[in-house]
Length: 72
Image 1: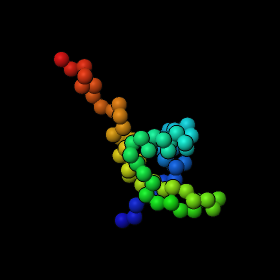
Image 2: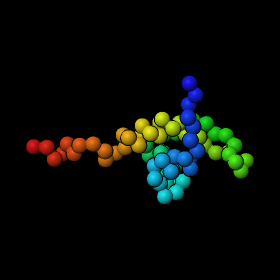
Image 3: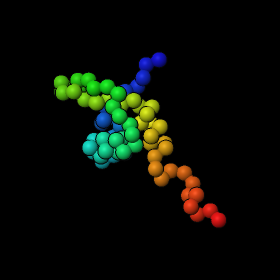
Image 4: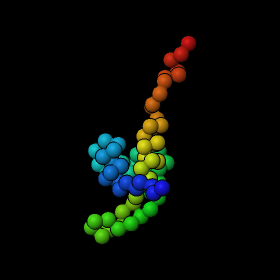
């Protein structure tokens, strides 16, 4: 099985981030690191992120779930 790799633009679009810089900071904060670096369309090296890791981190992001501090 081949892994699905996303560019930072793909990850930013999935996350609904305003910019690629915002997406990079968010992924870094969540502990998602690039798994590969390869040339992009412009010839510059671009980071590639594992799409499943990005999806998992977004699903488990801080602030998700039940407010346990409100229980009696």
